[in-house]
Length: 101
Image (cartoon, rainbow, N blue to C red):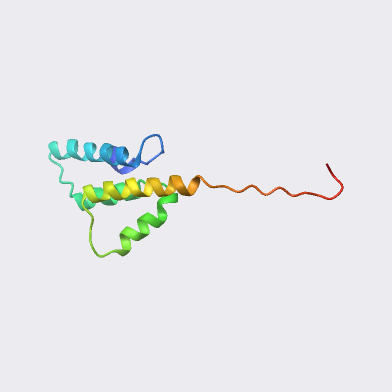
């Protein structure tokens, strides 16, 4: 159980694969007789995401419907694409001082 509760997304794999990894751990725990509700698992998955996913987490918490694991997986794929597209744009400002070359 501690591996599930302490798991954090580190960017070394896709968010979808991270979700699958956490789901696999939950499945193993269920086989050992632990009751792990999907809503509980979704809660752990959301809290395992990095701070840059804060808006995604807030959006989940403000909607009235709960997502299934499949819906969460699809939305994480979309979120990962959004973050990649957002991170692909940067602007560097260079201060030019008069009289210096």
